[in-house]
Figure (cartoon, helix red, strand yellow):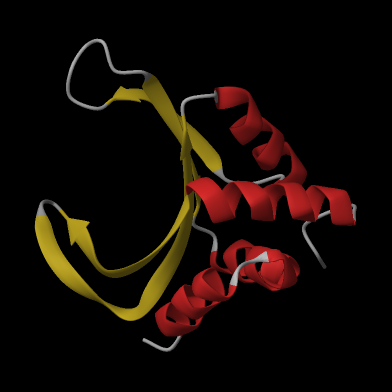
Length: 117
């Protein structure tokens, strides 16, 4: 099943991901501080923003993901930010599939390369 109730929700998430998101391939995991290779890579989607509300909206649309923060880059006068992380493999696949047509060719290429690893 697709993670969005409407095309508007999908377009909203795709826009946030296009502008503020990252795609990460985790090839290792840690147990008791020891780095170990994964048998299969795990894919993660992240969106980081200084406004928490859009991230809460995305998490509600997806009924998944988790928000961490607030964090600060470096100096105390820098704005704080939050991150939305989507790590569940079925949800990551469903989100990418649903928002694919809304993503730029550059972002599509990044995801294609990531999934080919």
